[in-house]
Length: 145
Image (cartoon, rainbow, N blue to C red; front, side, top):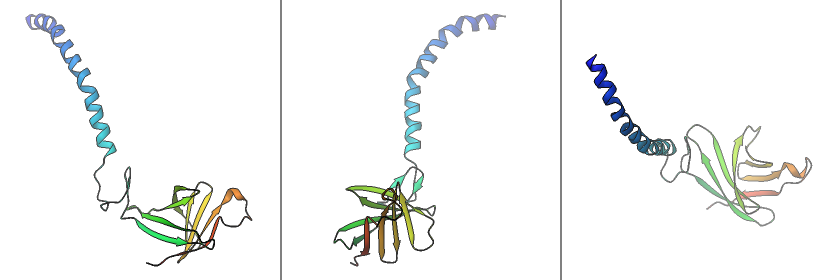
């Protein structure tokens, strides 16, 4: 009975400081947890971009020249989980294309655009231009350095 009485007298004195301490520490703990999630440890190659938990090997950049005379660089990324990506300039912006199933060659998709490569050749198509529309960029070939 004495212990219960002492507990009832002391408990109100202890609770407010603990609640105040928890209120002060909670934002810091939440920030540390968010940082731990946002910056995962990686075994990816140095200089390789990271996309959350998706780790890529070292990027490979290939220079292309097309029938129109236009030249540009495409950067290819291979993820450690087997996925492949291509950074292709379209209308002045870099677009991230994702490798998809292809009967022949490598086919990459981004929105309505398709970047299709086979060997040293590549074409860029826009599905919004219609099914019979010519490629946006055609007869592009890699420039060997």
